[in-house]
Amino acid sequence: MAKNHNPPNIILLMPDQLRTDFLGCFGASWMKTPNIDRLASKGVLYRNVVSPSPICIPARASFLTGHNALSTGVLSNNFWLRPDHDICGQRSLAKMLAEEGYRTEAIGKMHFIPWDHDEGFHHRVIAEDKRHIHIQDDYAIYLKEHGLRKLSGPEEPGYREGRMASISPIPMEHQVDAWIGKKAVEFLKNYSHSNPFFLWVGFAGPHDPYNPPQEIADQVRDLDVPEASPATKETNVFRDSFIKSHQEGSAQTDFTYFPKTAKDQIRRHYAGLIQIIDQQVGKILEVMETRSPHRETVVLFTSDHGDYHGDHWLGEKEFFHEQIVRVPMIIYDPSDSANKTRGHKEKRFIEAIDLLPTFLDAVESPVSKHRLEGNSLMPIIKGEKIKKWKDSVFS
Image (cartoon, rainbow, N blue to C red):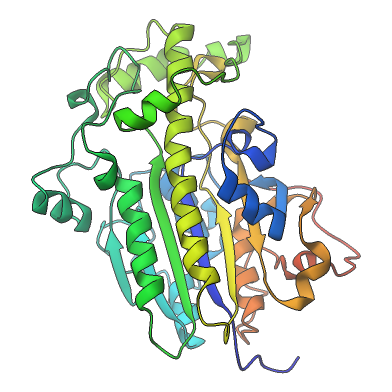
């Protein structure tokens, strides 16, 4: 294969803790996600994508290195990759793309440890986890400049009675995902290097607290959300530990009584946060589509894992039900070679760790791919005949 002398820009859009079945293009007819749906209509929508882990930090370590959680050794939110992981053969995606001539930018929530580690990115604009209110990241500095500050969940109106579904007092114009989207748009508008770029946009939502500003909460107040699945004999085993962990941990919420009204409110507020992200996706796509056409831009949309919000009487994540480990994925390749798969809905099993070899394949990197645990998705994107594909996935 001849080396591509004009490799594409790459944008990775990653909301935090986003369920597949809360997006219109994945069948949620009651949801309004027009911009994400439009991206799906132009690219390939992957219906059966499995997260490498049902927990934030392990999943992100796998995204970054292309190795599953057992290989990285990152099995909980208390740990990160060992400092010499590059030397050990688990190289950072950002470093690998930088070697291919890319400028690499990370905006928003990455969830690295320590929180300000660069992990090979040339530049980061940081808005960390919503619960990390004492971290003075770029978003905290921005809020301070506007006379605001990060708030813990219990400081927000309705938090405890809503079981983490609260109202953020921070105005919409300063809301964290609106700020992250704004920073991504600024990067795209101001980018002037001749090199291609890799931009990872990590939205902080719709992760709990489920805290849209009042104007968004008003818009979803009467949204007809699907009813939560009932508990089962299997899931009841985990109920006591779930209650205890949320009473004692950063959630500071009592789920001993978890009524339908609270589950419905969580779902509506979660939907509101998704609508904010969809708006930002639209703004990013608009800027991308008006850029100079001399270099194409591949766009990927996915998440690290899902969220229960009341299914089986559980909340957040950590177990292996479909609501948690099945994640959305959309890939838009504007090149002519991908024309015949536009709007295609792919049913084959995909693993999130397939993204890194896909990136390397897209830029025709000479880096050996046999050391990566995922498979490139470029043959699927381009509609090539594939004799054999994986018939199982690992989480």
